Image (tube, rainbow, N blue to C red; front, side, top):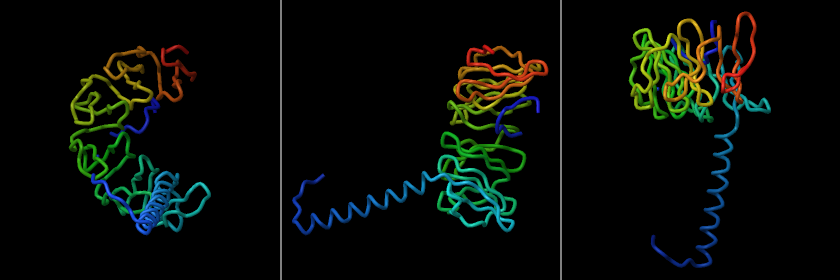
Length: 235
């Protein structure tokens, strides 16, 4: 690969209570609180895909089986949903293993900022967590949302759209990466640099390869050597 661009593809009334009723309400509230705690624990428990007997399921941090193996492929959970494949079609499950979005896509990426990149045939678009299209299938290439923007490929050039599908940064780059820590790596005239959310070049294209920012640093290549830059572009 020429770059380390990540996961870019080429979806009130007052009343008084008797003592008996007060105890009843307290019991109901206690049950609700316990139920909410269990529900939150299930939602926040990290789960990881594993394969057994040719099928994928999920385990928790203690290696306890949380979702029995039943899928043909499986992705990591993100924002409470994970992409799974049944046969050649992808859908999404919740942490209980329930299929919230039926398998129907040729490809499916993790949810990011409330939407997920999906593909059907040669085109890509974005769905929300109800499985409805937030941005219709129309792109030849696309990436994940970050900083409210996602890279998309239109007529051979990369630009950036917002979650309503409006083109915010016009297609002009040879390659466009996902936003990470408010900067996105782009390629122009054979070199990699970085833009901000307005499309302004903040680190001039100068690197032979470049990656996303993590914890204030990004990996870059100059010549045959790799190093790291900060958000100002200083090595």
